Image (tube, rainbow, N blue to C red; front, side, top):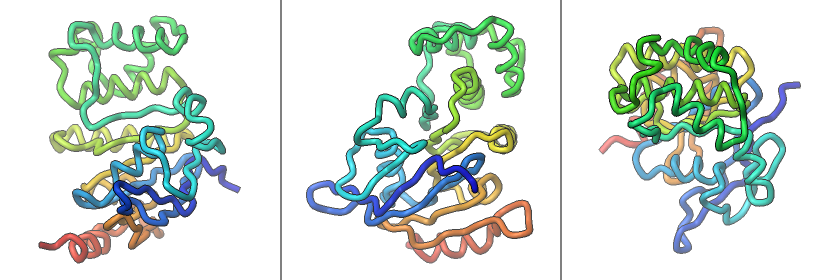
Amino acid sequence: MQKEMVVASSLSVRFSEQNVLDDVNFKIGEGEVFALLGGNGAGKSTALKTFLGTIPPASGSAMVMGMSVEKDIDSIRSKVAYLPESVMLYGHLTGVENIKYFLSLADISRAESEIEQALTRVALQKNAWHRNMAHYSKGMRQKTAIALALLREAPVLFLDEPTSGLDPNAIDEFNQLIATLANEGSTVFMVTHDVYGACQIAHRIGLLDNGKIVGMFERGDNAHIDTEEVHSAFSARYRK
């Protein structure tokens, strides 16, 4: 049986007595990429922040690796990696120096060769390793952040609009990297409004509208989820 890594059970979140998430249910297994897809205001970011412990559930539960976000959030945060839409790294430090600094905050020691191996795995060009982060593109910053997650050996990755602002080549590279990590056993929970990208990378997609999951799509015999089917469902919900 596939190990359940991220679970929402009848999860609801309220702001000013209004449901932002309304009885949301899903399970993400080990080595699975799950995309929560929706337009602006659908509740995607709220769902992500709930699992990161910054927004409390009003009812139901959010579990990560069998731990409750309400009771065990410190343990959860020590074991997961979060990639925000805009990766916050120090511009005056190099890629390697950023990684060393953030590993030190987690009291983790890694040899220089291990850091270089992680940067190689995420396909960050070697001539950038010792260049100040201020000169990195968004895609390069994302690669650095994922290399850091690898070195922390985080089994679960939370991604917030990970391909927003990337050029097509960077998107393809990013999707290939996430697919590789999932094949190696990492669990990925991403929120996005990018229908095509979600269909290319995810094993399952939950369509969120007004805080409710109104559709669930899975890979069939093909390598990807049917883009036309998802796009049609998305457009029907968000067409102006």
